[in-house]
Length: 133
Length: 190
Image 1 (cartoon, rainbow over the protein chains, first blue to last red):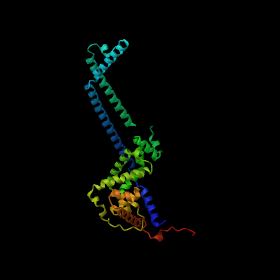
Image 2: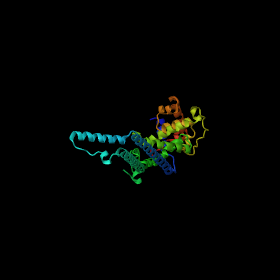
Image 3: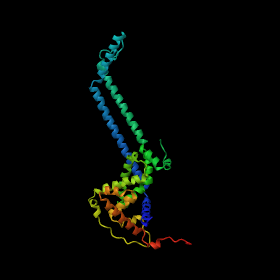
Image 4: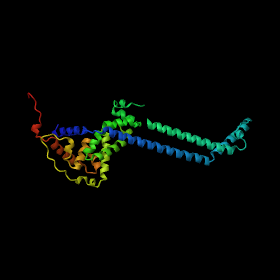
């Protein structure tokens, strides 16, 4: 082995020996703080995005008349079943009376909002717990 | 799975990287504790001021945390982060106008070798021009090949090779100032 090769090895050994740093712990803490900050920011952004998406989804579903559509499907299924078997099924409309479409529409809105709110809270709690892990 | 801080200190780097890849910040903190001196030291040896070196080292560790899943364990974790840091430093310095003509940078004032004491690497590196210092540090400190250095610095391969060679020759002069005959160990009884 030439002298030059031996010196190359010596240089690598010297480079591998890090200089003394007295503030290593402080430096590590700074990085941990930055990581915690960016993780919290990501959780907030994801939660907000989910919240906005949920709101738009609920609004779009209501505008499309999903509640009234469900009532029509329920009534249609009941009529079909009773004509086929002669059995009278109780529909949501029967249960709520003649004002059902309007009333159920109001209930649907409340249920949708409640479910959406609960899901968002659950997602936020899960995100927060993951952030703490 | 949660590991106590004292437990983390007993884990191998590859295990800590696996925890960090799953989002474990405490595990990554342990990796930072172990290897920050090496990363910050390399950046300072490349010529970065301490504040800039720390800034770039922080960015490198943050990037390493986000890319932990990419770490294949082919080399050491420390070498992997050092390479990330070296590339970040080059990118940052390339925005500096002075660095656009790195190859034409002036030679530093010549320090006369002190035959009375052995210089350490950090002192010896000061005798190199900026480009020599960067090339030698990237080659021997970050473990980059000459081709990788040439690509990173936008320099021809031959130029990089000659900078590394010249830089090593200067370091040899600084670190081994005594004549060859004086350096040979004497063996009793031979």
